[in-house]
Image (tube, rainbow, N blue to C red):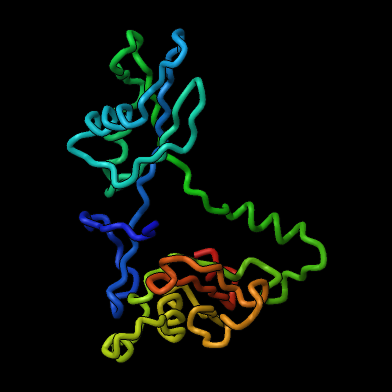
Length: 234
């Protein structure tokens, strides 16, 4: 599965690291639930495709860049969706929430609920609680406090040097990786398992590398450890 998405709307992009032409773009994600009618006739089914087409038509002229079923029961279907521009999220939700749709073969109207989705990322309270309550950890020591971030699915080409790109080598540079994240503060160390020629010879639980994937030559994962907690929080 391709982990990259084409970005057509850059109006809400935020400058991140100009030397590498890197920008940050807010995630515009929403959850959509469609209440299903009671199935009175055996063998009668709901078409997820038809429901999705109805939802797409209701949000025009905005388009979903992601629309997929996240949960399906006898009572409802839940979709996870994304649009390109977060500023347009309220209007998209307004077009869907508390509205109804009608499916072919069913007399009942299906009610829709829509709301902005929470991004699945640990909160400041969660990581502070974890390290505070963890045994055998000293918050005064690096690595035993919230100071390290793990990022995956980064495009290799974005972090490759110009010299390597010229040679057709898109291995990410740890130097560039460090420079990019120094915009948040002083970095203690970085690690890119893919850039280590010896890492793939190590056992998986020691190497920090994931098992094979078709995107392994296109994307990478990296670790950044900051010197100060305040840099990590940023």
